Image 1: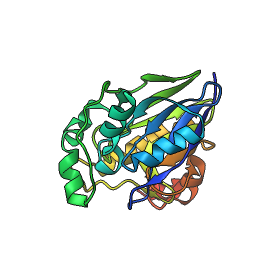
Image 2: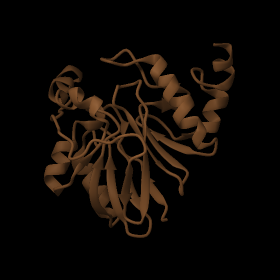
Image 3: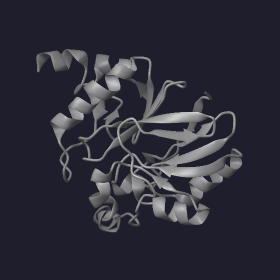
Length: 218
């Protein structure tokens, strides 16, 4: 199988990450969590001679899904993910955007995703991991060949996703990280929804919420 490569693109005044991932053989690409600045994302795809095939959503918050409908309309792309438990968020993106001063449009995915679903992108594949906690329908995309995970707002370098938003659950979040992400391996690089990349191994050492030493104390 082919490897996945990623272009990490901070968008909107919130500077959240909206990666464009692509198969390094076919150049088929997916826009992951396009929260805004759609013109910027389109230009990046064009400049890199990528072939857009889909939009992938890790969860239903406006800073990550608010631009999905616009992008889907412009390029006639399917919106794939997240898990259906985030339907209530995707159907209220407009209201979320107003609360945070962002332009966001409600969206309805072409396909909801479940644990262990496979998404084909060119000659590469992404495995879906159901990782609730930050939102009830949050998912993670994993490419084994590249040792790369797209984790949305589940975990960040030195932190984890907040759980004080509607239907967030801290214990679910910790369980998702320790039972779904850690088993993938310490050498897995992850791209989160905000901030720099890291590895699961580094977070098991230094993350103040989910390091091995912190979890042993709890």
